Length: 218
Ligand code: IMP
Image: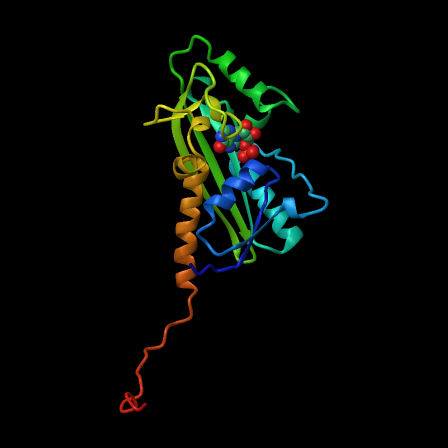
């Protein structure tokens, strides 16, 4: 698959996400770099009030620092009966320097006794290149379960059951999660645009007019 660029910088320090993004981008012949490859990976502070603002901030920083087209994402879990919380604050829902478990525990406490357990994950992907800035969104609707289940994934995966499934994200294979997840959907939208983009950047194909009378001369 031809791409408008051959190297992409994944602006994330989270090994789970790098693994997911690497899986999702495997069909494209892109050389992937990330903060994992740097001796002094700088943490970009996610202090913007929106997912889009944080994703763009990270992608801009890494494009400026490396000169390589940079892809960053920001994800939030938006819970209906909590007016969209934890949203952009999903990583620090239970406070600063907390574990995934602390956040899950707080979420289950906040939802105790609530019958409306609808929630969605939303990812904003931002790409910053020399040509400009682009964003894509991916959403996965589901519910927050009463109890955690499953040992896979990360973050809120053990308590998020996507619509149409009996299992939580943490019980699904990573391939299945990637196919339907917020990040997977955002990346699928990104990939579809990349394909179109690369086609429209192809040099115009010349008609092959052949050379009459030269075939079969062996
Ligand atoms: P981030 O800022 O995109 O890293 O996401 C913020 C927080 O959302 C993370 O710290 C996780 O707690 C949670 N999160 C992001 N993506 C996922 C996911 O795919 N499954 C479960 N939790 C996630």
